[in-house]
Length: 353
Ligand code: SAM
Ligand code: FES
Image (cartoon, rainbow, N blue to C red; front, side, top):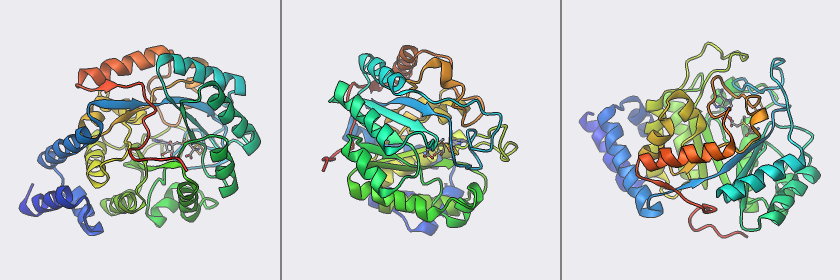
């Protein structure tokens, strides 16, 4: 680390932000020493706000059917080899019941943009989960929808919405998505969700094709200005049936570095150590926690469908029962000095409108 980079780190720690160009310089000039200083501060600030608690969310992958064609994604519409499934209302509610008994207090319903899940169908499922478990939080991650749809789902009881922005650089966005998808609509969705009153999560893949320190600097600026309640970042991992099959995966090292930077920019953010991070490194999630993350999202989907929700190659946790997944994560998190808590794990200071 040279004096210039040391100066950048000192200012990031002091001010919680940097000019965009300096974010890019920090990323380009990073080394192990810089990563260690940032991680130490990120962990310190995370401990002040969250103590040793790690929040957990039960992930229910409700459909692998998708009308979109994101170029990086294994369940994109044009992948004829993908084995498609859709969970029924009863199956989804049963996953939530099982999850509740295992200690989950947040359920994340995630899926492709499957036209079957109209507002009526999805609202009924959200309301059903809330009726059985009034004290839980429901997070949706069902892609781009209209403002009216987001409003109806919020009124049905949904609390949070995850929609990664994928990249804050317009041209990079166009490289990763087909022409019918637009960066503007992505931002429109995120703004609508926030205005409606959701706890909103944005985020991006680390190491996606075409990503540069400059595009990452824009991602960091977006986090600084949009101030999401949650931010999902994990390495890009190629899927063999996509045009990015021969691209390199993102690295553990850069993902951990960015987790620490994001914690410093936005101390109260809910920051998951993702499954993708655990896929490229067997101890990736533990390392994520030690870099400043404070959330894990074990899988609650029925074991029979897990392999079919194949966003990228070699995804972990596709063979275990939900109880095993929770137990495994409890041990992993414990091994680095933290503990999984039975708690909704809302964003600090959040009050539902
Ligand atoms: N349809 C919803 C959406 O678009 O937000 C949720 C499902 S989508 C598959 C969830 C996230 O998976 C995406 O936001 C993307 O960042 C991530 N993802 C997709 N393909 C990936 C890949 N090859 N490597 C790593 N992450 C990937
Ligand atoms: Fe729709 Fe990936 S392209 S979930």
